[in-house]
Length: 267
Length: 267
DNA sequence: CGTTCCATG
DNA sequence: CATGTAACG
Image (cartoon, rainbow over the protein chains, first blue to last red):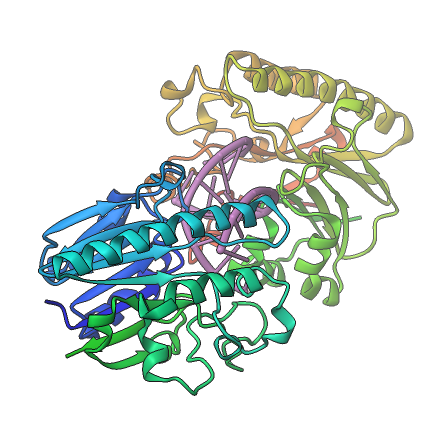
């Protein structure tokens, strides 16, 4: 079973690969790397990742129906036992926003939750996705418990959960990504330990660690970021979490994404 | 009166400026430089050319109504006495395809004739432009003769006149830019010496010199080009032409346009 | 094959 | 402020 799992929104895998993603991957100790916003077809993704595939990585991907948008993937050092695209909602079936891959008794999900914009139809779409995906998580947790399996769902959730998860929380209370309803939705996922935010579990008292910084202005340099990339795990797996870190340095020399990789390690 | 005049289609002045246009301009001995396909608003053009303007160049420009398309300009070491945009045809009035500037007894025109595509509405538009512009050239020649002035119209005519003006002429007889009707239209302009193609006058027997090479393949390296950038002058001025050259080397180290500057010098 | 625009983030 | 795409050349 994989012990080190990283998630990173690459904001265009082709651009990221030109700027350092592949070198970062070469240095990575991860067993599984979940990618979001590949913004590439399956063919383009394989072409871009060819050096990594040659080096032994396997890839499973969910291609977006709209060219140059969304796209999620799971890279792994050995092939997944099974791969499932989508989460049973026809509206988002071919959006390239969710993919699950099984490795022994562990299921890993790579999620790219929609961006919203308060008071617009985009926000309604985000909320439809949230409702539907929460139902999937519920079913998934129940099925895993019944089958003695564990589940880890990581990716870009596009929601900062608490005031600790966003540098300028006061300035964003009416902005999509920090709306009360969105934060309450995350509360609901974590209720009674159904799911555990394992980075927060390990670092309960710190601000951040942020995983996304706008490209505008000097947000990265001043660490004016958001923690919107999470690893949520089933409770049994959460008990085994050993270490978690945001690899801010990965994008420090040359920034190859506006997100940084978030890595968790399990016993 | 200016004695050295250059024309160059820059294929986007902002991109060209980043890659060497301004250095070429610094080294240029020209008194007047006509630009085509600036693909910029007047404001963007001035921002882009700011170093040249600081160095003493003056600019007159015809902004395109469609953003990022067309656009012609005349740079000069002293301000023009008068500037006229367009050539009296309402259809093309704000297309950013023609500009005239007066310097003493010389009028200089910067032309970007439309690209065509055989058997399509684009070709019909090109031919409407050609008919209308030929009428303007006729009026212009008559007026110049009556007033004892000379006229030079340079730019990207998007037509290779003869078999000498295109490397692979056999492969292009049905392609816009080398259609019989287009070539005959140029014949008509030159009839009875009303207008003189001064580069060809100086170099009657050579193939080329080409002034445009496709970016595709190795067209530039193999000199598989087209001569579509001309200086047409009134007969009196043609008598004074001393030297003409295509500055192919200007774009050799780093190609800042798919066209090369064409420079003529007068006594 | 390159430029610029657009929608999206 | 960066991505990919499109129309255009």
